[in-house]
Amino acid sequence: MEYFTILIIENICASLKTMEVDLNSREIPLIVQNYINGRWVKSASGRFLDITNPATGEVISKTSLSNKDDFDKAVKAAKEAFPKWRRTPPIVRSRYFFKLRQLLEEIFEDLSRLLTIENGKTLIEARGSVRRAIENVEVACGIPTVMQGYNLEDVAPGIDCTAIRQPLGVFGCITPFNFPAMVPLWFFPTAVACGNTFVVKTSEQTPLCQARIFELLEEAGFPPGVINLVNGDAEVAKAMLEHPDIKGVSFVGSSKVAQQIYRRASENGKRVQALGGAKNFTVVMPDAMMDKTVSVLIDSAFGNAGERCLATAIVLTVGSAYDMIRDALVDTAKKMKIGNGLDDSVTLGPVISAAHRERVIGYINKGIQEGAKILLDGRKAVVPEYPNGYYVGPTVFDDVTANMTIAKEEIFGPVLGIMRVNDLDEALSIIHNCQYGNTCSIFTQSGPAARKFRYEAGISMLGINIGVAAPMAFFTFGGAKNSFYGDLKAYGRDGVEFYTDKRIVIERWF
Ligand code: NAD
Image (cartoon, rainbow, N blue to C red):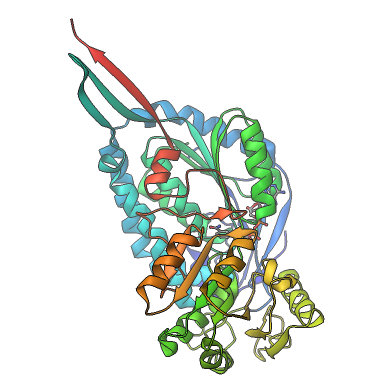
């Protein structure tokens, strides 16, 4: 076992029962374990992955890389827990979520800090995503109302018809590194409140927040087996797709993997919703309120270090909007403070890993090679206090054209491109030709332009004078084209539909 000095997270780790913590030592060995059938258990695999703080480059923990046997145990526990949990009245099930909500509020600040430490985003961004996570729990609290069916008397003389929503069994989710506290909560609160049982496989790069949240699930008193956590990589995900007792899979990650998940889960007869990657465009019309537009755009492009599936990647400036916005975008981006997100004055944290930084820099190099003009170059960003952190500075390209790699592929880093177009129709045709369709936005004061945009964009999450059009927990989240595979999207009403089957009862009494 290896030992690491991690003074910065000592307080947080001291409360992590999931990990082996030697409180007498400043050198703290940490292993993130699995939570199966109401107990913290070691993986049988003997494989581990180092967890690194992206801001410092220090190894802060290790996670178990579980195997199929671990996963099978979790599904067995979930399957056994299902009949009793299903019979638990929805109002009683919802009370566990009221308790979870209260516990999440109590550790709100600690959890946000842990999120910054494992993911790199700034503390303000971390707080925002923890808030969004809690909102999903709040929706689950309302399940006695939300999962109600519908009925109609006299569908024929003396015959009544009722639609009842019933849970199906064991569901699972596979989630990405960029929102490790929030994304699993897009899924399991709704699924479990509806009466299903669940297995979470979170990203192996960022498992700490879910481990902490699972401690709260334990404290909230959820019955053993109802919600389980199996840490690991693609091996666990693949076990989920093959397991005969998994009724459905919720996936969030890159499009390449989303496609594989969708195909394999469907072949195996499972319900599946697979949310993929993105390349998002924002249209700026000449009549937009430019000062407000610039600050919103900067947050959209560079917030969360660009590691957001709703980040603006390309600004499409219509006509004279280009002259009004170009310099302001660069000047505002230049003022961002790069550093460790735990420092309140920092506005741009690191990207997730050294490998990902290289990937982002590779895209910047490609943009230059293909003829885009670099206005602000973040490749050589350094933070003197943290020479081993994974920093990329804000990068702005001008003269981007639709055929360039940086206009077509997801970079997932703090890189913004500017493309000039003549009118809204040209902007829409660029949006239509992109393989992705997660979100897009327009900035304008014109109602007709906004309506045309909403009507014709063909994209699922739309912003009108909004930079990050992230639907709240009581709406529904998911994209179009290669950004989404499936039909029912994440959470909200779609979540309830995804995790339940409608049983139609036609009734006559002689
Ligand atoms: P990723 O696709 O590499 O990994 C996502 C999950 O899939 C992880 O849990 C990982 O262990 C697992 N996985 C990886 N390879 C697998 C394989 N071959 N088979 C089965 N499972 C596999 O994604 P990431 O790098 O963690 O996250 C970034 C991506 O997620 C970006 O593309 C981003 O746009 C996307 N994302 C999308 C949304 C959305 O709502 N559409 C939200 C957040 C992130």
